[in-house]
Image 1 (cartoon, helix red, strand yellow):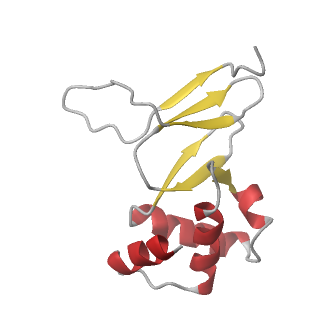
Image 2 (tube, rainbow, N blue to C red):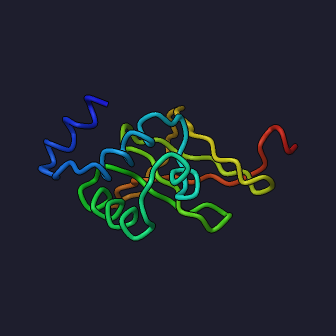
Length: 121
């Protein structure tokens, strides 16, 4: 959590209790989480949650993406990596293997790969 506090201070973001709660949940997760998964661990209304998430996105503290279940998933921005989303069970996996994927004159920030996971095969 110390790295997260340092990151927040570096970005010059005021660390409120709400922000700290959200970041602690995300920092302790090994996978991206949606609002419904995060709200189990925190006590705040939806508007406060999304106001803080928006601030984190604006300041480049977190990544977010929409899954095929139409939910938005969030994770602390640590390293660039791709995500695999199973089109059958909607399971999300972080892919930490290096992918050689380039587009001329583009900056790639996120890669989402959809397919069938080993369990669903």
